[in-house]
Length: 218
Ligand code: DX5
Ligand code: ZN
Image (cartoon, rainbow, N blue to C red; front, side, top):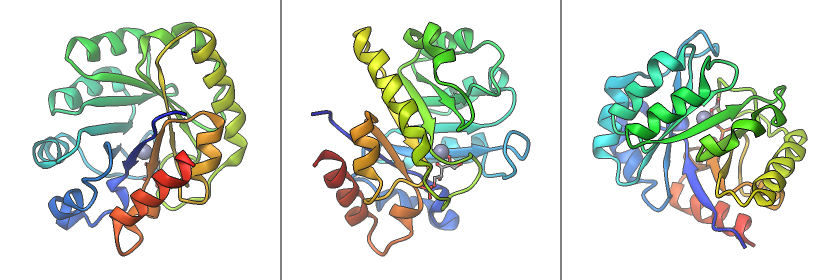
């Protein structure tokens, strides 16, 4: 049985009360911070100054999900802000291996993200350069979208490849994860579950975290 990590996405949190919103999820394993630039995705969230403050006050490590163009230029800045892991997209990175190594040199974990229409097999040749692979289960850009179950084949094929090669790579899923879909993604082989609206859209985020964890580990 795999140990499941829960990473609430603060995209669905109250942005003027970030400190208390971070306190509300301290039973989770990571806090997922969505950085969007109005270019790679049609939405805009936050940049380095806010991410830096989140890293300073968060009781749990920060997982920065960069939905931005030119991560080769900007991803190291988020490692410098204090993010434990930095995720950049296959569809945006020019030299993913060089960037992963640069993040490692800065003491951060490197994660590569795959959008719904992108094949996971094209990263197999550089899989050992990454600590984690993110399989998007919605088109990136917004919280509260419907879970794409058609991505589970991709999660399964990636888990099989990781097992076959004896790697310790984590598989993160992001988009539409809830107590209902958690068992589906865990069964397919994901071990890091991002959840935005399912955590911050309910009265008690800690209860939602516990419910997602329990359903995924059952
Ligand atoms: C979407 C973001 C997600 C988003 C998930 O582009 O990457 O992290 O917050 O939100 P939910 O869990 O509501 O689908
Ligand atoms: Zn995300």
